[in-house]
Image 1 (cartoon, rainbow, N blue to C red):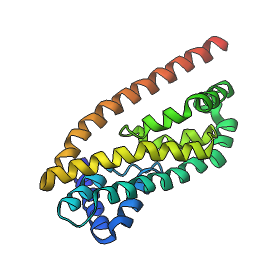
Image 2: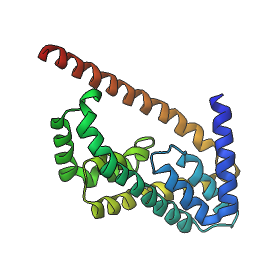
Image 3: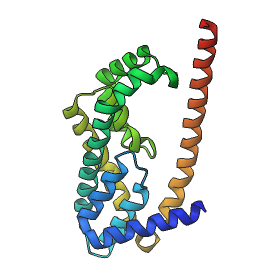
Image 4: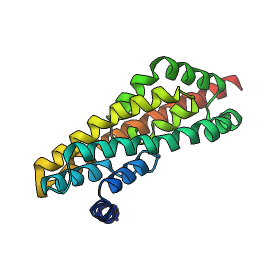
Length: 207
């Protein structure tokens, strides 16, 4: 079922890029960066394959992808800033998130937000969701945009370049990234379980 879903999604991505050109690349990467997990590991390598065919320019698709990342990230950022933060402040205790946690996140993004956003944009899975916590912590929006672009451009360029070099075998990239996504997902899940257990024990001690 998962394989069928991925194949259908890949077909949709291919169709949008084939018909929409650079705008299709921008649109898909914007969706991917708005906390909607479209696989950039399909979007950009297929764009690179079209560079291989002579339909696109390599830097053009990388630039379209990076600008799309900024556009979608802006949506996720403001959802976090205008909607997510009030919800966390009001109901965070039910999610085991305290005001102290929020203050720590604010200090973290104030001090390290530039590099956190930059490096997050270079990682599968995490890159899709980094804009929301940056918005919740209300990181400076200009710096957020700058480092989102600086991190997104090499990611898009590298995937498009790989797709261009692989030619018709561009889809094999997705297989390798899928394995990495699985490992990263397990690590994130383990971290979430540890966080919940740790917070629950602390609540029981306080009670």
